[in-house]
Image (cartoon, rainbow, N blue to C red; front, side, top):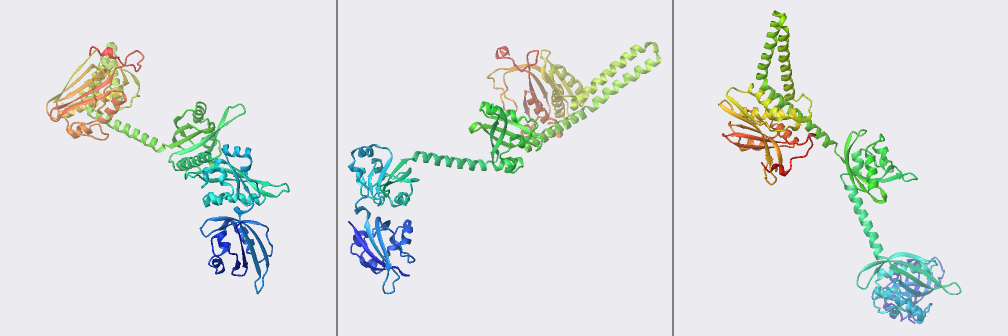
Length: 630
C-alpha cells in the first residue's frame, strides 16, 4: 500500500511540522519541499475539492471528518486520487490546532467492490454492449467497464486494462474533472447523478454522452461503489446544435429582413372549419411597415390587425392553408391607407408566413406617372388641334354660310321651306360630325375598344389634315379596300395617324414637298426576323400597315434615338410632335412601329396594327398557312 503521513500546524500561516519519507513516492515531492514551505499541500489540492479542503484546514472546529476522497496534484503535474484520514488536536507550544493526515493512493487500496473480470457472464456483456458501462469502487477506482469505453481511454486495449485505474489515469484531465463531479454526488448520497457530458475519442474526435451514475450499497446500506451507464448521443446533440444554429440564423435573417414578415397559426372549430388566423411572431420590419408595435399584433387574430370588414385576404389565406401552395396578391388596407404586395407561404404545423412589402409609394408614383402621361397626351392632342384650327374654322364658316343662306331662302319662299330645311339639317349633321371629330382628337370622347374600320379612319384624318397644312405640301394617299376591321380605340388610332401626317408635313418646312400616306394588308412570316424600332421581333401574322413618307429634312442620329422620349420635342426642326403618345398607343394596341430616315432625304414611318379574325373580335391571329401567299 502506498501511503504517507503529514502533520501540519493550523496557524495564520499553515506550516508542516513533519512528513514521512514516503511522500516522495506518493506525490513526487521531497520532505524538504514541504518542511521548507517551497510546496504547499493546500495549494496542491484540486480546486474542485475545496469543500473538503476548507474542512481540513479550518481552525474553527476540532471536528474530525471520516475517511475522505481527495485529488492532489503530483510533482509531474498529474492528478492522483487519494483516500485520506485525518485527526485534529490541540497543539503544543502556542499552536492552536494540529492536523494529522494519512494520505493513501486510491489505486493501491483493497477495492471495496469486486472486480468484474471475475464474473464470466458479466465479461460477455462488457465485451458486446454498445453503451459505455463502468463500475468503480468507493475510491473512484475502476472495477469493470465495457469494451466500448476503451475507445475513449488511453492507454488501454481491453476493458480489463482499466481495472485498478482512475479517470485521471486514462482520460485528459479536463474530461476526468467532468466525470469525477458526478461521482462525488453519488458518494454524497444522491440516488442518481445525471448529466450530458463531453467525450474525446483516442482519435481526437469530440462527442457527447448521456451519463447516469447510481450508487452500489452493501447489505448494511453503505455505499461501497457505483455503476454508470453512458449512452452516445453525439448525433442527436449535433442535430440539436444544428437546429439551434439554424434557428439562430433564421431569427437573425428574420429580424434583419427589410420586408415585413409575420408567422400565422390557424384557428379552427371542433369540426376543423377555419375560423380565423392568429399572428404568432413578427419581425421589426413588419411592425414598422404596418405602423404598429409588437404588442399590438403578436397573439392577435388577423381581422383585429388587418381589418374586419370581410377582407379579401382571408380567401387567399384559406387557399394557401388548404392547398399548401404559395400565393401572392396586392391589396389595399383602407384603415391604413396603404397598398401591400403580400406573399403567403405555407409554414409548419399547418400555419403560414406572410411577407408584406409596402408598395404605397410605388403605386402612387405609378398613378402620378399615369396622370402625367395623360396630361402630356392631352397637351399633345390640343397642340395637334391648334394645327387644325385654321382648316376647321374654314369648314365651320362654310357650314354656317349654308345654314344662314337656306334660312333666308326659306323665309323668302315659304312654299319651298321643306327643301331648305333639309339642307339646313344636312349642314347641321356635318357640323355635329366635325365636333365629334374634334372631341375625338382632343381625347374627350369616351375610350372604347371596338372593331375599327381603319381605312375609313385614316381617310377621314387625311381629309381633315389637307385643309389645315401649308399650301406648299401635297398629301397623296392610297388606302387599300381589302383591309378588315382591327380592334382598338378609334380616338387613339386617329391620334396616331394625325400625329404622323402632321409631323411629315412639318418636316417639309417652307419648300415644296409631298407626304405619301398608304394603308395596306401586310403579312409577316415566322422566322422573318422583322424588327421594330425598339429592336423587338415583330410576331408573325397579318397586319394593317400604315405608312407615312415625306421628302423633308430627315432625322439626325440624336433625333432618331430620342424621338419617342416623353417631353422631348423637335417641332422647330419639323419632327417629334406627340411621338411619345404615338409609341404608347401602338404598344398598347399590340402593334409595332419602324422608322427609316436619312438626314436631308426624308423619313418613313411604318405602323403595324394586328388584324384580328372572327366575328367576336377574339385574340386569335392568322396561322402560318394563311401567310403562305404573302
